[in-house]
Image 1 (cartoon, rainbow over the protein chains, first blue to last red):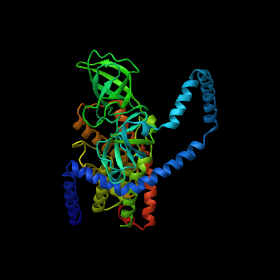
Image 2: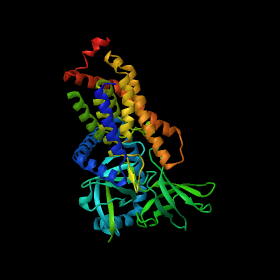
Image 3: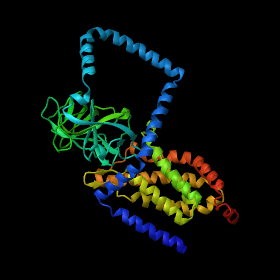
Image 4: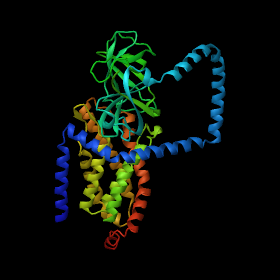
Length: 267
Length: 180
């Protein structure tokens, strides 16, 4: 090994040792700094992606259009059948939709945010949003949509923040199930092989016997997530050796997420 | 030296671009990783000190943008990807003479294997922290899928980077006569 290579190796070792010695807070600060440095790239990239997506969705093949047409015909028939029964409800929903938006009717103080990037890593489920310390966002703040819980903030820089999605194994949420006294901990799966990732509701009692469709809400235990946020609906329930476990379908379709709200407190 | 800075710039841009490349659903949501291929090209094209510098930059960028700090714990220490990149790039660097002779096949295959090795190492580290290790078909696809993709795109990436190297008059070409 040449002298230059040896010196390079020593310098590399020193820098490596320096980074490996970082504690939690220093790591968080360093990450926030890198995100802040790259924020203009992410914002530009997000805009470009939207433009490309809008062009791509406009260019549908004939086969896609035929399939879509057939699907729309079926939808149309179904909608005609249900239209009569839903007329009154529709009027009320429309009135409410125009009168209120989610932010106004929510019991929480919400900061709206836009998704800038989606997760690029294999083992963590995250998104990046265009809000940061400038908007009074801090770590461990719940992130929601009008449909339910999305996750919580982790690394927060000046104008950009990372949101750990509820489908990540590390995002643990205390939950209760509607219509029962059952409480448990919701966490994501380590591997989301399918198109729609599922959530695990663990530590239920063996007598829980949850039924598909029952909804799970945040219970407020733990301090990060306020109570009453919809997490998902029970898909299956099974007994394990020591407890019961339910699989939940997340309330929010995280793959199509575009806008979210950060809960900064109660009103 | 110009090539080194080009590779640094490409690593940065590609790392950002990877955020906008959706995972491949028919490969169990395997992600597309292009940065490792660029780093491994650098490993065979650059001299040892610059190879280490490239591995350092790519590793720190990967850790800063992907590793999560949750509560009071960091699952993968900042710097671990630097070490992974450096070790794997070092292996690739050992095959540099073959590359200079114009034999790229081994490096393209190795790029795929090394990409999977990085993801496997990350999985082993987080599994060690989280406990309950398991290796299902999905896990193997998430590890092997990106490697396969890297292997497939490596010839194109290597060709483009080699073209850039020639364009910048990168002086590794004279070595060819020494080996060839």
